[in-house]
Image (tube, rainbow, N blue to C red; front, side):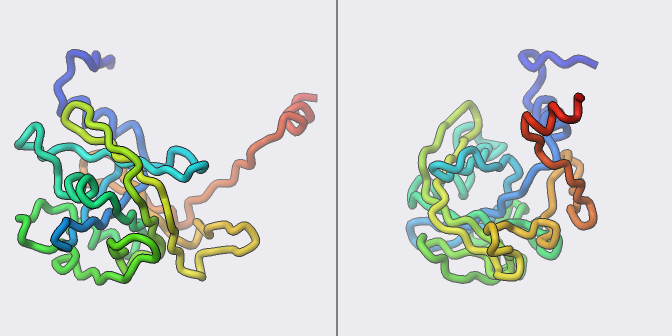
Length: 212
């Protein structure tokens, strides 16, 4: 089948893209409004974009029923200039999913999901204590495009539990961290447990030897 994206509805575009661009890492973002109230929400339009400086990006759509009204996460980041990306692993996936519920503003997703918080190192927004790793970020810029916002955050500090770090690198022991990935929009996720395949990157010289 072929799909003309200029003619497709927003729903069709969404379903096709999230089904093909997968698996996607999940950013469980904690943010805080100017009054100090916390919000937690997961986003799978997420990745790192560069390392010098360290920049991550998150796509946050507006509220589905209001074309130009941002979600709490985007509003909080715009007003306070900071947020924390908590890495989603198998053991907190169910709680993460609870944070995706569109609760009324007066309800706290962290409390409902059974999460607790821990102080961040640099930013005021706390991280989720149950998350084994977290990226503390300051807003670099926010691009408003159509019904979405692309938030670029500069990573100013990283927390990782000691058991998941090989100090020789330092390398993250990803095969032990057991992160989960988002697949299509049908509630499907993938585990990384026992799923690693090693394909070492080749140098030009190594490639030439293989051709000989």
